[in-house]
Image (cartoon, rainbow, N blue to C red; front, top):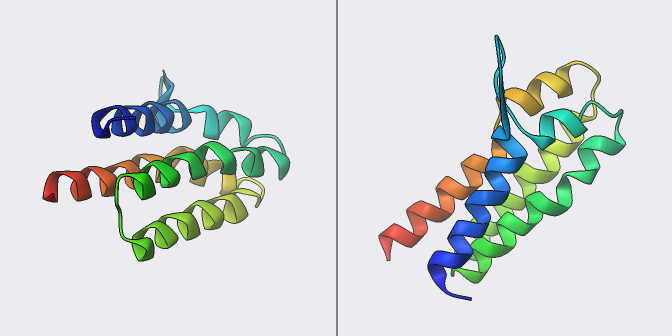
Amino acid sequence: MSEPARLARARTVAELLDAAVTLPLVGDVGIDGIVGLLPVAGDWLIVLPSTYIVYQGYRLGMPKRTCLWMLLLVLLEAALGSVPLFGDLLDVAWKGNRRNVARIERHVSAD
């Protein structure tokens, strides 16, 4: 798979997870924010597609240390997302998948 295709897939997954729909008064909400409403399990279901973004970064040559940091943020978001109410607000506001794609984009553009 080519570099632009990998980056495009990572972007698509991040947009679905973090900003699939726009709600009045709330703003962009993705699958992460919706599935995260399921107590505990919802947040952990999102770990797999979020990890796919990290994997694409790894395949694009991101340093291992940065990939580990991105993975740590995915796991931290899942753990904190499991906290009632606070976790739901975090899922809507944090947009961690978009942040990870931005890291990948910075790495790719620096090459």
